[in-house]
Length: 129
Image (cartoon, rainbow, N blue to C red):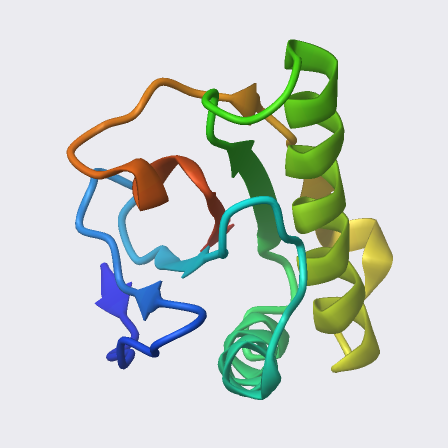
């Protein structure tokens, strides 16, 4: 698996994940502030780098999975927030040159806290054949 080296930021943390993905897949995660779907400048820069990797694999599918924390709002609100986060990421990837037909939105809605609450406020991007 190819990994991106990312830096933690004060308002919007970005990190590489090590969970299982298809062989030779590229995986990255954008973490969001609570109750936010905003992409700051650093997140946009990361997504531009991810878009370049996606363009190097013209037949790969780009999966964009949005999540929201279950501690804020109703289940519907969390589904909508997870979808909005995923859409913002997908829109940025498309504006950076990734064909929309290759991008698959997979909003997941609220998920239980894992180790830390911020893990539930994320969008995963997976580029795989």
